[in-house]
Image 1 (cartoon, rainbow, N blue to C red):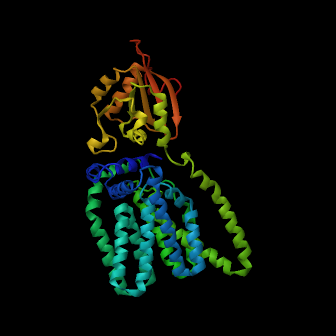
Image 2 (image 1 turned 30 degrees about the vertical axis):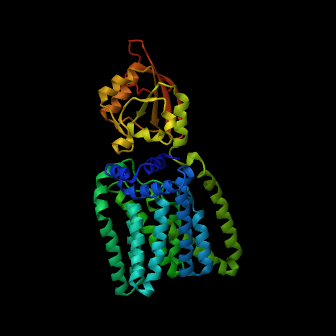
Image 3 (image 1 turned 180 degrees about the vertical axis):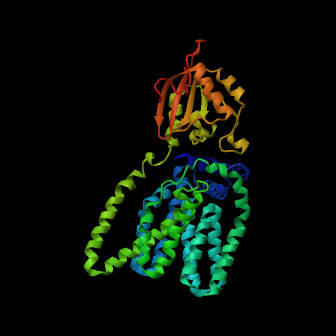
Length: 444
């Protein structure tokens, strides 16, 4: 379990009113998803399996939708191959095994795309109502699902459908946008949550199949290429103004990649002279997917591992030791199991996360933190890997007190964090050298 999943787990354990109150402060865009997982936890025993099972089921449903799209647009074999290729894509595998909303969003966009395709020839209002409802649900679970609307609009424009169809799609799309406008306006005030994004990261490798759509089966490429390319491209362009691109935000673009790959595999299979080479290429691709698939099933595939960080804190700490988070937002790294920090005293905490309706709680003023630290002879400090101390006075008080009054006893590195034990230096003469960052002589 990594940090974001830990947040899901924590909030899903709160009642619905607490989830709503917390969403007023942070993570409003994910509040509907937390409410869904809250209900899942109410039906089944809460745990890592229960946390991730909805994502597994959702991506299975998405794979079925991809297969039906391929069947309708390019025939049975293309549909079967597309449905089988989809769950093999590394990006899909990664977020299938994660307790976040992205798999559900992908499933809803898949079936919304299918509803779009089947609605065009029939033009019945209830079909467009189904399409609009699916897109609205997807947009409720994550705001960037709205980019799929743009892809769908381009698909209809390129297809040169009758104006009546465009009017019905426009009405459905307008309903989706109008229904989510209040949420979008409110969540704009929480944009600092994505301030950690420094630029485009982890560009989806499946984009390399986009050029295949230019000469692929016409009926299939018209919906497949826009859903593969446009959401990612729009998010990248937006990132030129404000860095906002993360691959999982547009995970549903994998739908288009799987459709194109399935169609091309079917195309080469029908060319007798190329059939053998096609199967050799398919086997080579499958073999190449094995290493990344195995790597995705290791703790190192995530930016941190809270199931390792918490136990490390429990192992290094002694009953009665002080506990310090550098910074306070890192409190979520040990929140997955309260038993890990039960016998330690959180030195900076003024109000816990639940009662304060926050993710990491509310901390004491800087001077109070510094004073309280001097009451302890041992402090266990938790710092996220690669994190730098913010300019916040509270964080400066923590690092300054550690530098002046404590010395590093030992540091343990785990995936995504380092846990350092500091012991009180009762020698009144300052030992720290100018410019020291409080990490000890080892520089770990």
